[in-house]
Image (cartoon, rainbow, N blue to C red):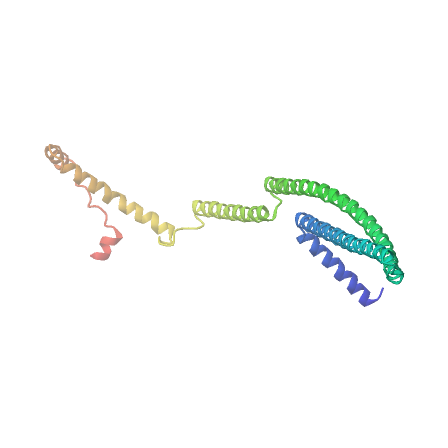
Length: 263
């Protein structure tokens, strides 16, 4: 196979596939029906033309027949007047008209036969047009129903182009959600294990524990102070705060690193 022949075959295949994709059978049926109607109209015009020609011949024959009758009367008058020459001329013209009438009759019979044949053909074509119209409408209705059913099935099954795009979008959203959930779970595990501490806090865990030990006594002292400020609790607080003479003096509280820094 030559190169040009291969290009031609490829082009025809592509063109056929493209046309098949964009071809709507309903439009094709309507176009075929319109062409059939045009053929029927042309045949009807042809029948009308033949009938017109036949009628024209009939009118000509009637005129010639009147002329022949008139010539016959003239020949009789010429004979009654002993004018054989005029009678002979009238009869000669009448004979010529008779010949013309014979030819016109032959043409009339031919046109009449042709007209009858065309009328019969027009009737058959009209019957085919009526049958084609019914089949066309039925096929169009079936195609429309099948097309609608196909779209419904594609929407249900999710294999249509639009539903396919929606499915891909949902799949991407689910993948992102799963990725974010996995990342959040991993961060929670790292923070719980201490492998990923808060950047705002000290990186020295030992120092953080020591600071918490210094902060707890100060919190307890503040809590005792607040309790002492409550109404009716002053006597109890004084009793609690009165030093026991027999008890040894309590050592002063240890200073926190912050107090040492201020001092």
